[in-house]
Image 1 (cartoon, rainbow, N blue to C red):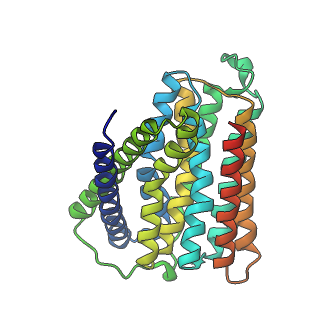
Image 2: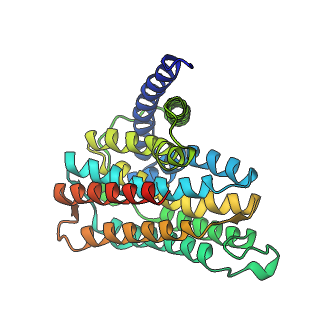
Image 3: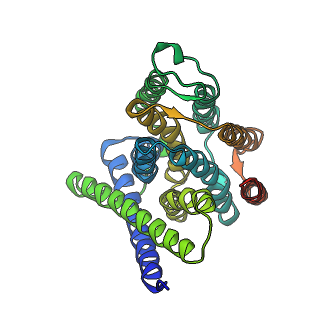
Length: 322
């Protein structure tokens, strides 16, 4: 019988690296924002969002090249987890205060990113241009998603910094700050991989089905960087990093990672994945509704708890579905 001890060691060491890497990443990111007078929201969405999406990127590319749907399923499952569990748990501990333009601009763009991916997954819009896929994402559709991503990043970068976004955090030198971002990103990536690897081996030792591993360990494991970064940022009272990381990671996952993966290798999908992408679309809309119709733009503890209940219900459903 294979010993479980090495897997446990891998899991806990990975989690320690993940937590430390997240702290370094948040400090480096806020320092860059202060040095260059870039909004904390842009840093949280783009720099931290890209950094914490690295695990999903590696899984997605490997999955596409191996001809399976683990990558796309991981991206959808990860982002459902990100919104419902990460923001839900964060709101339970510390109610999350959104800024108005986050809600009316970026949350709407978040819905648009999920909607665009939903359309290209469920409708063969550009299949006639070369990639004969009845249900899935063609190379042309991948390019379409990437164009949307670059337009969004360009518009985000041009956004003016408001005085209420100024950061009262320590600014390091430019070189030190960049080094911290790189080191922190490496930490959350390596730590996340070790946690997933350890958890996957533990699941195999206990004879858990590969399908259940994919739905839980892979999706939740690749969400650990976003979870850790958001929790650390919230306790540092940097809500722009905490929320921007989740929203940015989601937009980057759907437009960037899915887009790049489809360009490398067109993605075929199963009918069951259509239900899950519509769940993600509903989750994105639910987040918008909760924050938009609150005059203070706050995700409250009660709404955070409801997010957790919705996620547990979804998880039970997909496990029973098999």
